[in-house]
Image (cartoon, rainbow, N blue to C red; front, side, top):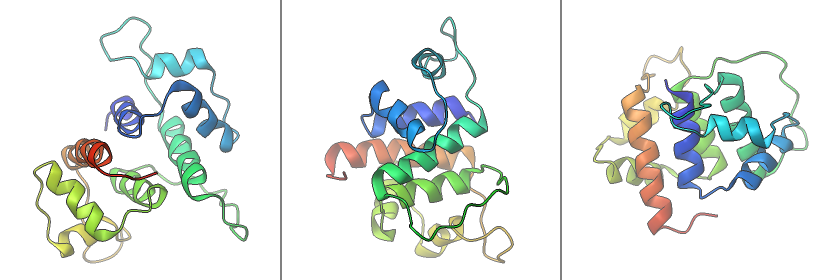
Length: 157
């Protein structure tokens, strides 16, 4: 998984400028400087490129959920570290953008990926569920490409 590419594609699809990205990190009390963010958003071949850590991407996704959905008043703090997988990235984006199943299906379709309802729901199941399906890097990138087109033509806040 290329974390920089994922961060870049999400920020492009949501039309987030640097100020908004820094605000997202601030919502989860993660110290992100403008200089460090610039390096994360550079392309791999650019000078001063810096790899985005899984923690930085995870914190960004958590902050995005807070920005778009707000915090849950009764939510208990989970101190346990959870591995950031493609499936979890999909789930966090679905939560942050309040995407319904039909919208998620449409986003994949916009990227020329046709999934049945069962295949789609298997991406969002728990790993120990018998119908769980691992989301490949290609599938996640297709989703992000479809999301960009969906948000360009749609009207998601």
